[in-house]
Length: 219
Image (tube, rainbow, N blue to C red; front, side, top):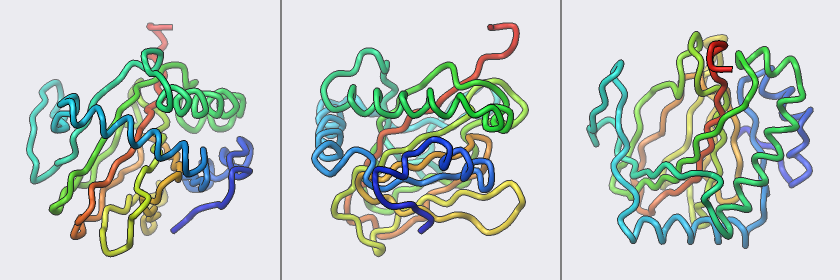
């Protein structure tokens, strides 16, 4: 469980150094337990309203669903259209993004400035839900550069499974991140990742921001 503890760990130079060294950085206590609970409540309300749908798999230009491979329910949201706790979360992460963008070595590492943003709310409803090994982006294309996940699971226990595995670029063993509430994990989007399947007796939930860089012709 590769994490730094405390809100002070959201220091941009330290996070950038971890991202440059390992491709991954983890912060505990990012917003505090009450704020994490409020974000969770907002996403749970969207799920009850039927706004979350089974996540899709990308195959070139085609998309499909297959819950044996990917069984999370998701909704893409407009960051500037969020309110309340979700808006506060987006603002906090975006402030961190601005500080990280000032680190030239990190911009070079991810292959472009972090100009755009996709905001995704997700829940893994239990019963052995999973997401097999994949990348959020290909390393040689414009698009997603940095993935930021905020976990919202106050009652999570190791037996529940659902840890995130992220494979470093040097081919070493994966970094394993437990989905504990109020934990923020950042990683280079082109790294391979997967979800460890467990009993999933509880529903796992997170809020994800995917920062992007346009291609040169789009600038």
